[in-house]
Length: 255
Image (cartoon, rainbow, N blue to C red):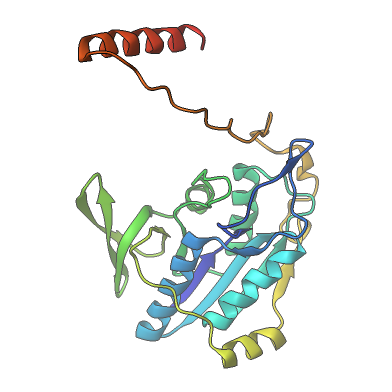
């Protein structure tokens, strides 16, 4: 079984976001594997340990994503592929097309990714990859069992559990609760430092000239407004209710 894992390098969730000129400042920031993608890496390794096969970690981004790929290798992935994002627009459509082009070269039995990334939160890339490859997919799974040519999954459905059976090859995105990601071992870290991995460019993927292929564009980026101090309403319950209704009405009129 050949399992591909899609991962993204994101800000550490404890980092403070700083904007300058409408852009996020990356200098001095700690980057990590997107937390939801860690569940995908762990699940791929567990499936390999149970069924045998190979796990290939794949990431699109600048050169710094090598660190995230080496973390996946240290956890137990067998191979890693870096897609250089130079010349590839940073919208979900173009990123998914690039990843799909790379996956066509691998002939995978199963593709895993995170439910969404904690930086943009779009939750689109993995699903778009599945559509580009013509694969069935299930998102936000909390349990995954592979039996021969099929996979049985569970996912949360507004407080209930939805059970789905899918024929392989297929793509699944991981939700919190699927597993508990392991820490890379020291021997794994040492081996990962020395292990080469494959790099691909836009030209390698047949995407030369895709600079203007984005389907979406970021118009602006800003931090949320600071929270204002609360207002304590005085008087009996009826007076307070009337005052609250007036404040809500005034707030709606100013939007």
